[in-house]
Image (cartoon, rainbow, N blue to C red; front, side, top):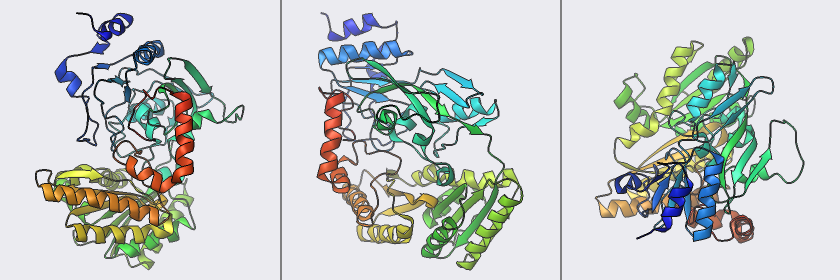
Amino acid sequence: MSSPLDSLIAALPEGTVVTDPDIVASYRQDRAADPHAGTALAVVRPTRTEEVQAVLRWASGHGVAVVPRGAGTGLSGGATAVDGGIVLSTERMRDITVDTATRTAVVQPGLLNAEVKKAVAAHGLWYPPDPSSFEICSIGGNIATNAGGLCCVKYGVTTDYVLGLQVVLADGTAVRLGGPRLKDVAGLSLTKLFVGSEGTLGVVTEVTLKLLPAQHGPCTVVASFDSVAAAADAVVTITGKIRPSMLEFMDAVAINAVEDKLKMGLDRNAAAMMVAASDERGPAGADDAAFMAQVFTDHGATEVFSTSDPDEGEAFVAARRYAIPAVEAKGTLLLEDVGVPLPALADLVAGIEKIAAQREVMISVIAHAGDGNTHPLIVFDPADVDMARRADVAFGEIMDLAVALGGTITGEHGVGRLKRPWLAGQIGPEALELNRRIKAALDPAGILNPGAGI
């Protein structure tokens, strides 16, 4: 008996469409492990834009949902499979071309962030966006959620480095937006529209990235505090005077979780640890480091350590990057990425502490403190039904708190499916309706990533 998939299989190179149940099952969830994930008809792994066009023409003609997926490291359920749909994985789209004259790279979405960094570094260039998961997350996924990272306090987020895109729309039309021009205001800013759209408006098949000259070796400052509020106040003082290249926060739970694994000699009694850096050249970097060290001291830091040795500095940065897997070793995680204006950072962290106590769940807070983007990590045992319920309640209360403080329910992970119920409460009904009108104009049948984002 023929299947609707037969025509799709015939239109694509052999092996592109995968129907093996075990393989299809492995694509049901991203790292958010959405418990409501469905089961797809197939996983499709194209290598070229033309193949993505064929997939979307077929899906549009048959009314089949398409869930775009990168490396599957998303933390908000944005790549959750839906029943009867297909998962369109860009993992095999891995070409890159570097142009040193324009300081750009043309990249397919399946390359990992770390692979792009390595490829452009060979030309003396640097791609700044650096999520903590940079070694395992893909450029396509970074585009989908407008990912940030540790250095975004100074260098900005993914959208600041996207000059152009090739996007395949729901009906299979391929469009080119932008290009290797640093200044270009012809037409509406459609390139920016697709960055952060979580695969709900089209499938990105090629990206033109802006590159910078190689980063200078940083001066790093690490400080321990016995007060979270004091550490947060130090952040506001620092960012009011200079632009550090990194300003990261870890709370006591994260410090101890990392120390359990890495045995670095971190202060287990500290309430907070800050990892700051300046990559300014020469004396300016040393001056910035000295300034940050003094601010930490003035705000009551119990210990301050400074180094210009790149290996020593990187060891502390690695500790911060390792915080999520270290805390994850203590139980299943519900991961947040709420953000607030910097003056509200201390209130957000204090409020999260109260929620943890009220709901009797462990919540660790790590943060890109320099831009107010926090990552509360709710630890729970899914086998304990009541604890799982309390964790879900805490998840929502943290988002409500962030919005009440003038913040956002997501700074870089995306809305996905897990945060969708709270979106209207942040952006309001008028903006939500505008989002939906744009979605309807580009995807009138609603086949692209249904249930995610807007």
